[in-house]
Length: 265
Ligand code: ADP
Ligand code: MG
Image (cartoon, rainbow, N blue to C red; front, side):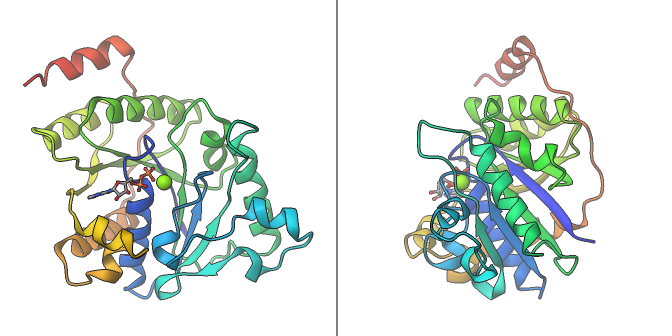
C-alpha cells in the first residue's frame, strides 16, 4: 500500500522544507518515495536534487511527448522528484499545473504500487483551484497541515481545514513547525484539539535548516547526525504509521478570534 499524503499550510510556513527532509529521512530506511511539488514556486525538490528542477508545465511546452527522464528526477538516496510548475504569475490557475502533471505521471506509469510514500506539497491558498486538486481528484488519500503557533499561520490552517471538510478529506493531523514564539506548542495542541484532530509531529526551529538550504541540501543530507535529522525521521515514521483520521471541524471567525485571545500573553 502506498501512503499518499498531501501537505498543506500557509505560504512560507515550512511545507517544502518539511516534505524534503521527511522524504530524505525516510529514504534512509530504504523506502521508495516520490515527492511531487504542486506549488507554482516549484521549489519543493531543490534540496533533494541540489538544484531547481524543470517543471512539467515548462517541459511540455518544449517537448510534445515527454519521456520519464524529462519529468522525473532522482534526488537524495533515489527519492523520486517531480515539480508540476504553474502558470506565469498573474495568469491562470495553479490547479491546471497539478492536473496536467498528474495525468502525465499516470500516462508514464510512474505512480506505481512499489512506492511506499508519495508526498504532494500543495499550496495553502484555499481560494485557488490548485488547492483542491490532489484531494478532489483522489490523488492523495490524506492531508497534513503544517502550522506554527502564529496567528496568521493558524488562521490559514483553520481555513484549510474548511476546505478539507468541504472535500470530505481525511485529516491525519497537524505538524507544528515552530517559529519559537512563547506557548507555541500549547497553542498548536489546543488548536488541533479544537478542530478535532491531533498534533502528529513537532519540528523545532533550527538554523541547520538554513545552513543546509544554502547548499541546496536537506538537513538530513548535510547534518545526518543532528537532532533535527532525528526529528525528521521520527516525523516520517509517525506519518507513515498513522492510521487515524478525522474530518475536521473548523472554527468560525469569531470562535477563532476567541480561541486566540485565550492565549493572550
Ligand atoms: P513553504 O513551502 O511552506 O512555502 P518553506 O519550506 O519554503 O515554506 O520554508 C520557508 C523558509 O522557512 C525556508 O526558507 C526555510 O529556511 C525556513 N524554515 C522552514 N522550516 C524551518 C525550521 N524548522 N527551522 C528553521 N527554518 C525553517
Ligand atoms: Mg513550498
